Image (tube, rainbow, N blue to C red; front, side, top):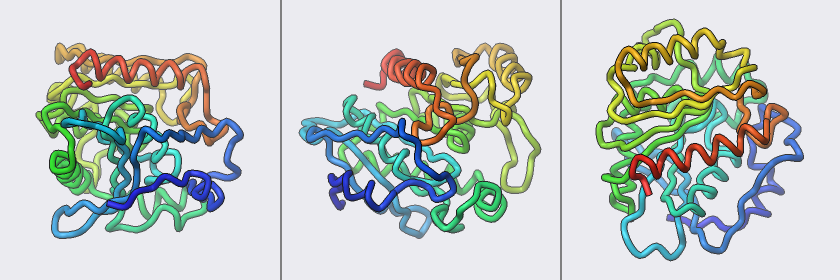
Length: 275
């Protein structure tokens, strides 16, 4: 594994998605001598998947593991910083490049082209299998598979719901503004509302009341599906927040909601034994 501790250098080279520009003044960059972070490679389905990890530098035993699932923009500087923030809380956090077979999100300068030419080509089955390999990698590099959770943002929020239904080893999930309903395709054969009764662990869903891309009626549909399944999962809606309200590098950032959501996430993990 290659260590990565030079955040200043990464910022001078941007490090953020080219599809969002300029970078907002609210951008958070976490720097701490107490964490170890860097790039690595994870064997999966006959190939090597790039990933970013962060963990406490002086850990003495197996660490609780958080799988971090990217936005549509891939594992850029914001997602890397989410991993660093989780490391300061005592977790091993790993964010894999889940589009690596189909292309590089950094090659796209606008969101619509990125969605149409790359994101839409990534099959859910591939993603879920890759995340299984990430979990196995973590267990071989100081992580505790029996003490594992997942969180994801936007595209990764939807994947979070699906992966909690897929992997019974997880203790919890936190899905940030991930799509809940939608058309089924060959590459997206299920939506979160379809697997509400199959969740293997409780999921906390964090959504914005002003999110035009995830209408409130779809959030209510998911909430009802969870209730019908007697699920212990919960959904929190922030009335003043829109989509991507945790993305501090974008104009969509809503600080009050983001900070509350982050604390709720940490409390959710601890409540369900991921600590």
